[in-house]
Image 1 (tube, rainbow, N blue to C red):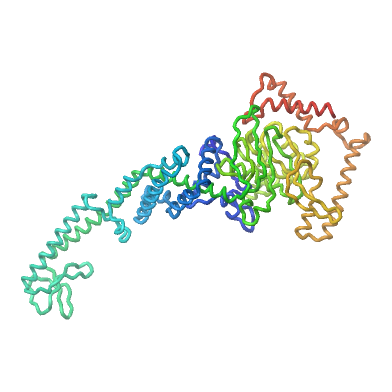
Image 2: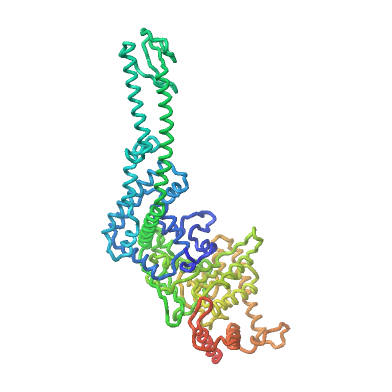
Length: 634
């Protein structure tokens, strides 16, 4: 997969989004992951290809729509879909088996299994070729598979498969291997000589009951009744009460010849087996091409079955390539978390939400809300919807319209890295630094409570600076959740930041908080952390004490803010702009940035479209005009 044609995600992002393994310490594993949800493949090689698809979703809308066309077709033709899946079910791991043949580590049973598997594939594809419209991507995909008829016919007639299965070695059919045919003819001739010699000895000894007996390595012994007198040149090898067994010089010579022919035959059989593998391996690319076609069919079937598991509503994503203003867009209505939507008993109770980023709306959402109110779920489900869309799958939403995303970045959770000697905050900043250096205007960035790994003031400062940079400099799409409510005041006027919160209902008398899990406009006034403490069983006395401390702390902070801004005799140095106006610091920083761009000449000339490295000039001018209006009204 080429980086230029796929949506890029690093390992941390895949872990944060639980694509392949959940982060639940108690359960862990694949259950509940996106891969487990969409993996309806019935072949081992199909599952591996689907895993690669999920690691590298597409970016080209044409390629994505080709996949979606096939998924559409399969969803609307259930009989053909089920027939195709039934034909693929039970196929061996052809991809690995042909690799064993290629590496020279294959066994006879492996070869037979491979040949049966490819025969099944050829029959299935022949049947499917006429079942789908000739213009469909699925029809073209079926006909991309090489015709295996002649190759399979050769191996079908080259040797007896039943004997090979039973004995564990290949017995070539007559006319296939000249060396084997010669040895076989020599052995047949020798058997005739043994028969003639036996008849001759019966006549010489005048006894019709003389037979050959084999004892271990000493084969073709003449078994003669003890009542018969034998010539002196007979050499006795063994005896019983009734019989004696002999070799003659001529018989010994024939036995030696027999053993030599047997060794020659064994050598020829081994060489035949080697050459049979070699002949199979001569078509390695052909076999592999057929496997890849079947693997892709299996993956497309998997996406079709997955789409049906989401329930309603479900939609085909629509891709926006080039807006006149060059802005990216992500517009998803009534989106549900894919893994929850498909979970039995949970999908119907899940609260859907709309996510609107870019286009005619701000690029970023600054998200607040109560603890355990659904913020992280909203962040994750937005990313998963983009991944599903660019994978070529339906999305569990009523409407999904987006520009292709080049990269997804996530900063979710808090943990340290002992092996690298990194603290929790250092890990946070390392991941954030990667985002700031590599995100583009076509990226989707998810930041969940950035800055919580350090002091309140340091964390707030980092969160403010990072969010401001992403909104103004990077121009990416994203969601930024926080419990720093001062951020919402500082950035409330920014044209690229929309203030949203997860709604809840508060019973002031009882002190209970009911989570509504609905994304609405505005700012959540509190985080309601004490409610979560009560939910998990923290003693009531401790919760009540914490509430009193929180109220006192909030009152003191408000008093300090009023004192700093109103008292000219305060001993604490206060920046001039705090006394002088209510203009947000982000506004002043914006004008400084635009001033620097004007001085360097970057604002001159005609308007330029957005590039992966910077927002468009139209966007920059739009921000400048917005802040001018803010200053005029300040």
